[in-house]
Image (cartoon, rainbow over all chains, first blue to last red; front, side, top):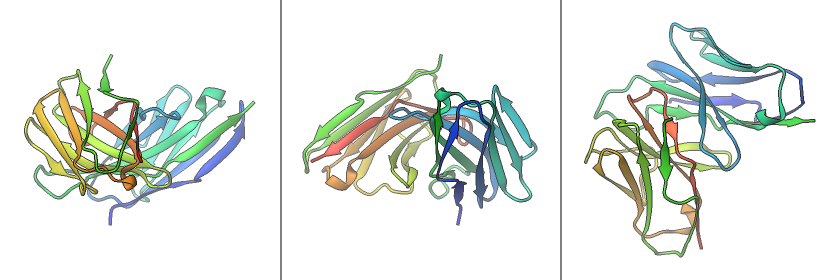
Length: 117
Length: 112
């Protein structure tokens, strides 16, 4: 069964500190993995997208890693800011054939990150 | 700047009402999606469409239907709203399946 699991469920850190969020998946055949940031009451916004051959991708203070062998990804946030307080969602897509069975995009349930001043 | 617009941010409807949630994208994307998001469950796919007048069921289509008469517009219909359909509904679009999706701001629907 295709699954995406994220840990921790929630995290509180002090402003300026670094943190790492984890994502483990069992999606096959793998197509790509994305990290989204979702502010409260808003739709998710894409941070990074990685395909099978990529193992690191950065977007400002956000760095995502992918280990396709162990089927793990992490999102590292450097020098956290108050505006980083949000839910971070890991999304894994399987290769999709039009007309085949339903969802090939599997969402994790997210990590709720709170940054304290 | 890419834009996916949902018609309402907040909606309150009565049990049994027919509810329409509208979504419009201005990026000429082929694919459009409807999700619902509930605490602890993450986003779950209701329906998606890869072309005008085409639709495919997602993981939880029961109690919902969709309409895609024009490329830019994808509507989610609750035929007879029930309290267990109280949720945040998110529309998304993408150029290709599995490639970066752009989300609308969400519609918080409450069924009383």
